[in-house]
Image (tube, rainbow over all chains, first blue to last red; front, side, top):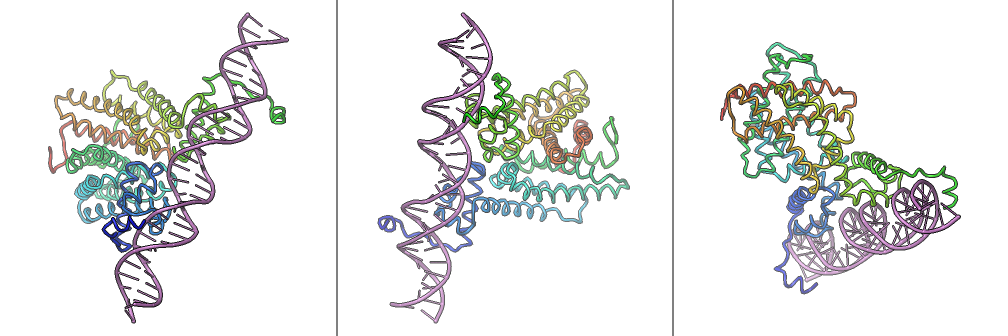
Length: 216
Length: 216
DNA sequence: GAGCATACCTACTCGTGCGTAAGGTTACGC
DNA sequence: GCGTAACCTTACGCACGAGTAGGTATGCTC
C-alpha cells in the first residue's frame, strides 16, 4: 500500500470532465468487444486506468453507463450527418452528402458503431433509445423522398414512404456493418455503392415505375 | 412431495424427440423476449413445462441451447426460401419468390426472427454462426445478379456484386424487423415494397446506369 | 499551513443464475 | 411381478460480477 504509492510516479489527478471521457472511451471499447452483459465494470475501469468506484461515482450504474455511451456516440453521429446534409440542396445531393458523412463516421468510429448498432439492438432497455434515433433518420429520409415526389407532381401514401425510407436506412446500416468488418474497405467507395443502389431505386419509384405484379 | 405427486394428474412422460422440440420452442420464446443473457434456464425449463436438469440432459449448456435454437430457426428459414426460389426461373421472378417466402416466414415466426436477427448479432460466439447463414444468402443474391448481368452482356467486379447483394439483404432484414414490430402489417405487401426498391435499383445498375459522381 | 472539497483507492457484501448430485417414479420387456 | 432403463424431480454448490463502505492522498483557498 505504501510501497505501491512510492513505486508509482504519483498518480495523475485529473478533473472530472476528462476522466469521464476516458471512462466513456474505455466503456465503448469494452462494450463493443464483449457485448453489454459480458462486459464487466471491472474491465472497463481497468481499461480506463481507474478504479471501479470512480466509474460508479461519475457515470452511475452499468445501464446508465451504457446509455451514456449510446448517447455520446449517437449524438456524434447525428451531428456528423446533419452537418453534412444542408437542407436547401437538391435531394440527391443531400442524400449523397448524408451517406458520405455516415460511412465516414462508421469507418472512423468502428467501436462506436458496434455499440450503437449491434449491442443496443437486442436488449429491451436500450432498444427504445436507439429506435428514437433511427426514427429521426428515417423521418428525414422519408421527408426527402416526399419532397422530391411533390416536386415531380406525384404523391404516395405516408406508410409507403416510411417503408421505403426504412429499407434504405436498413441497407445503409447493413453496409456500415460490412464496412466495420472489412478494415481494408474504403468508406467513400462504400458510400458511392450505397448511393447507386439507393438513388437509382428510389429514382425509379419516384417516377412512378413499379415492378410488375401488384403495382399497388 | 407425495402430496405433489398425488395432486397432479400423473405427469405425461414423453419421448425425447418431442420434449426437445418443446424445449426449443420455449427457448426461442424466452430468448426472443429477454435476450440471451437476461433469459434464465429456469424460466425456459419452466415455460417448457419441465425441470431444468432435463434441459441440460437433452440440449446441453445455455450456449449450446441457444445455438440449437439458432440452428433450427435458421434452417427452417433457409428451407422456406430455397423451396420457393427455384433456380431455373428468371432472376426477377426468383427474387420475388424468395422475398415473399422470407417475409412470410418472418411474419409467421416473429419470435424466431427476433432470436436470429436481434440476439445473435451482438454476442461474439453466435455472430459467426449467423454470419455464415447470411453469407450464404448474400452469395445466392450475388449469384442472381451476376447471372442477370452476364445475360445482358455486362460484367462487374466480384466485390461490387457482393456489396450490392449485401445492401439488398440488409434492406430486407431491416424491413423484416419493421414487420416484426408492426403486428398489423402485411407480409405480402411488405415483400412487394421491398421488391420494388430492390429490383428497380438493381435493374438500373444492371443496365449500367450509375449515379453521376464517381461512376466507377 | 489549516481546512475543505474533490479525486481516488482497497476490500468487502450479496444477489443471481448456471450447472449438478442424488434420488424418486413410470413404462416396458421377459 | 420384477429388473432396468429412461424420464423427471428437488435441492444444492459455487463462481462471477454489480454495487458499496470506509478510508487516504492531493490540490486549492485564505
